[in-house]
Structure formats: structure tokens, C-alpha cells
Amino acid sequence: MLYIEIFIAFFIPGIVGYGGGPASIPLIQAEVVDRYEWVSVEEFGELLAMANALPGPIATKMAGYIGYEVGGVFGSFIALFATVAPSLIAMLFLLGLLYKFKDSPKVKRMTALIKPTIAILLGVLAIQFFSTSWYSAGIIQTLILGVASLILLEKLKVHPSLVIVGALVYGAVFLG
Image 1 (tube, rainbow, N blue to C red):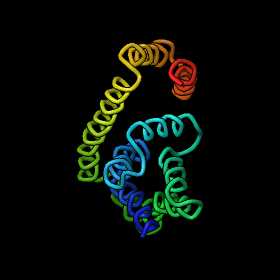
Image 2 (cartoon, rainbow, N blue to C red):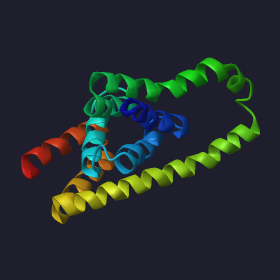
Image 3 (tube, rainbow, N blue to C red):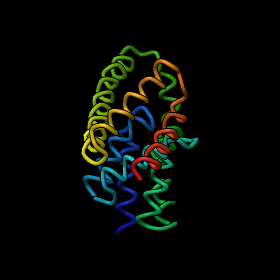
């Protein structure tokens, strides 16, 4: 039963997470934090930071780790397969159909309507992480990390993975 739950927890976000890994993150969080309670919000936030710092797709790294923690090596395999299965199925069976209608105004409208929904889901996720950080690390630490990250990303154009690694080092030194 555990392996079926692992499969469902990662297959559903793969199906409805239109837009790839970033769009799937709030959906994965809803499954593994809220529904199955395999990890806490804090652990999910740390996992997301690590997944962003490492090369490769975010969703598969998260699936592999959570699957391993919950169900061992086989759980990791199930979670990884469930994460990529929706895309694999879509590519195998719908590629010709999608290619045929790629310039359709209806398809373009549908895509335009989905983008704000994804933005809202990512915004809610960011607010949840901010409030969790605010509570656990403190106001000053949260503001230092937030302002420093904003400056590094927007003003100095530092690569996001370097900012994440820097935040992890800061957390290990000052908060660990």
C-alpha cells in the first residue's frame, strides 16, 4: 500500500502540474506535506533549496529523495517513475496531436489562462516558506537572507544556484 501511495503522490502532480518542475512544486507539497505528512513544511523547504542547487529537474530530485526516505530504494524508483510517467505517456501518445494543433488559438488561450494559476500557486508557496522561516529562524535572519538574495539576484545578477548555496552556508554557520 505504501508504494501505491508513493506512486499516487508523485503521479498526480505530474499529470496536473502543467509547466514542469516549478509548476509541480506546490502540488508535490500538497501531497507529501499536507496529505500524507511524510515531511514537514520546514523539511520540504530545505529539500526544495537543495533540489534547486543541484543540476537537473527539481521534481525528479525531490521525488527520488522523498521516495527513498519513505520507501527505500524501491520507493525512490517508484517516485521517480511516477514523476516522469505522465510526461512519457503524453510524449508517446499525444505528440502528433499536440504538434498538429500547436498554433490553435484555443490552445494558446488555454496556456494563457493556466499561467496566472501557476503564478498564484508559486506565490502561496513562497509566502508559506517566508512565514515558516520568519517563525523558525527569526525576523532578523529572514530579512537578512531575503534582502541579500534580492540584491544578489536582481542587482548583481548572481546565478540562483549560487545564491541558494550561499543561503545554505549562511544557515549552517549562523542558524545551525
